[in-house]
Amino acid sequence: MPLRVVIRRDKTISPFKKILDQLITLPQGDTLLLCSGYIWEPPSSKKSYRVLDDGLLNAINSGCKGCNIITVAGKFNEGYWEDYYKNFIGRIRGTGIPVTPFVATQRNWHAKIAMKLENGVPIAAIVGSSNLTSPAYQEGYENWNFESDVLIWNPGLNLNNYFRSSNDLSQDGIGLFDVILDPEVNQMNELEQMRGLYNDIFEKDNIERYDG
Image 1 (tube, rainbow, N blue to C red):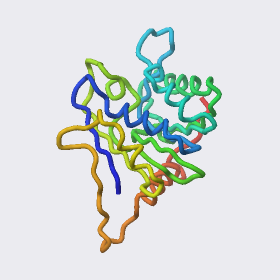
Image 2: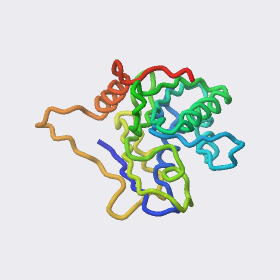
Image 3: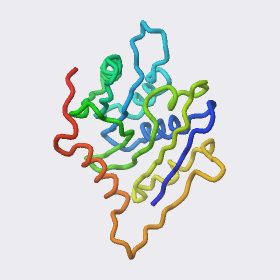
Image 4: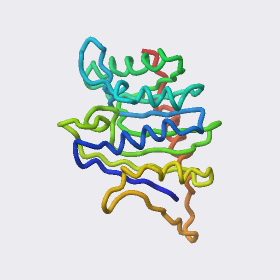
């Protein structure tokens, strides 16, 4: 099971930004799933950081033309977070890429997951602590957070070279490694794990379509 584990440990580099952009621009895939508890996309009039302006929209345009994007959010404890989610959806749709948005039915979504799929089959996924906000995604940000994320991909699709090509993510004691599944233990493989994660997200009553 090929994995890449990254941790942010200074303001200069956001490993999450790098692996997310890498996942989004993966040539394979017809669907991109983006789940985040919080998304920082204020209106342009606010004159502040916007995550789509920080290379994310460029990555989406590069890797998702002809794709459908599914978004899940829903920690709207402050009213502006819902407005920012609307802005995020609207700006992506403005490029001509369709977006199917969802929210948690209890408005308590906090999981951070990204996934690329082809014909409903997961290709690669990121699961971790990073929201689509400046403390996690922005590089050079003074108020950065320690964040850790795990990238997993389907080894049967010849993606090892693609996901192992980024040398600037090398970190002492953490990074790339292979996990050997114990054949004596009855467990799911990489594809089954990602498919199970995707199915859990869309399990009945977990989330609902958002038309805001």
